[in-house]
Length: 185
Image (cartoon, rainbow, N blue to C red; front, side, top):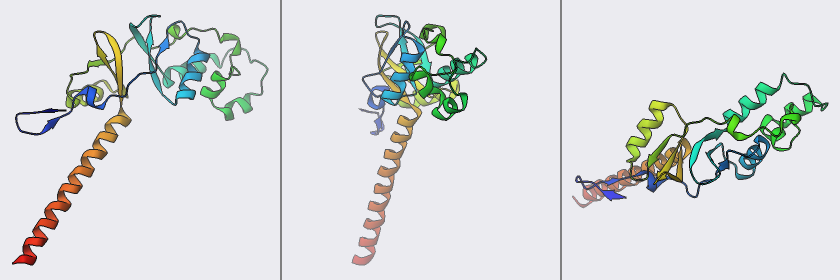
């Protein structure tokens, strides 16, 4: 955190980001990506071009679109009702989705070919404004074009919770101070 002229602390993207970031390769299969999402309990990941350069983002929404667009394909012979109760993400990850014949589909075909990112020095206020303006749930933090962190809406809620706790502690301290002064009079 850096001090501002007013004496307050100013949070930057690097103060809030989660690092390291779990990434997906553009050449990975959708089945592999769904497995990573489940195993790592994430809802989105930057897609890299085989090296360290980000070329897009894959989200659970993209995986849902992948599943929806393939539902019309020929049934794999599995019990469709059982697959529905398993859930689309789990079914894809286990290779028993409605379209097992398409398990070779590459992430590059289904990812969003844009990555919303900010520099690690960006103020948290600007990060929040950008996320609201673009209506996105996550923003990636970059340094020299490499992804070094991620900030999600959940991370922002965690920061807000901490700020509210600190304000409550400050309020309790002021109340205690006033009460002690009243008793001493």
